[in-house]
Length: 439
Image (cartoon, rainbow, N blue to C red):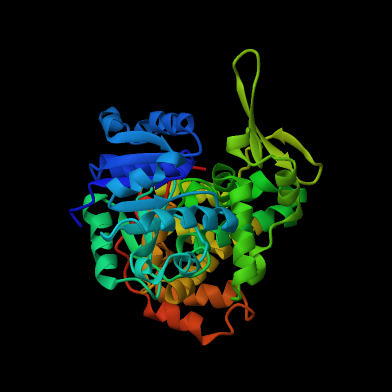
């Protein structure tokens, strides 16, 4: 798709808006119009956008505007990208404005939404029949400069030729890891990722007398194949955003993991108190800076309801794993995990096995092949992909054995689990890229 020379970003002052604008400008070499409520907000977004891709040269390609200039910006653009708040009423208002502006132009324009989970088909219905064929979900991950995943979602109205061209544009021009996904709540990456994160949050509440939040994060740290431990990730994303995603999944899905999408009460309480995480200065974690300049990392103590210093947990199985990884013996490292039957090792092993199963199950339901689960988790979360994790566990038969032994009959009643694992093929990803010799 070589004719995308100009792009209009609606909602450009948001975190994703300004970052996606930078991707179109830097990789797509497009003229990018940034639309916000006020031009001042768009100017601020522009100033931050080029820093996100570390390319000051793209500033001249970005033009700040406000909603009074929406029609003119759309006239000049071949692609309109909406990335406003994840609120249905907000989306309706914005897309009605875009649809009204589009009625004035005869040429075909692509309309994309960056929603992280709302119905693409529902949003497409806001447009007249003639405009629905070029409406497509285009979900980038944050921060898009380093997280290259882009989930592309068609609707039943979508012109497949246009969809294929946009897919190739994302892959070859924007340098994205493109994955086609079905129009399903939270799509594929977030459904897998936030299932894991929210269950970790539930376990933090369950084990609050053992330490809670930092206890669970220490059990599921970088040595398990993720750049950030799960609850640190929730703080980075924002607890309010996390809540919106898991609440939406709980209300609109009904698979075997349904109850793992229930947000724990302590998290709801933090959200009510506006403790959203990193962007608010405090959430599950916070950092205190003393007058001396020394920074102290603190964590919310679920049991007592206040912040305390983060503890440095030391678990024997982690010590063995990290020691083995440091000399490149990944097989021995995971044997140390499997053979250790402490409470912490059992929690860790159980989480990784459930991650494999849920990823493969969800990939068949929401994606189009098992490799799509690998792509979304590697490129969207920087987590060790499920197919690669099967390899490091010792292969399909060993994973089947461990699932039967550790997860019990309640999760293995469906034949589909054995079918999913049995269908698993070798990963295109090297697990050594994700497994860290770090606590």
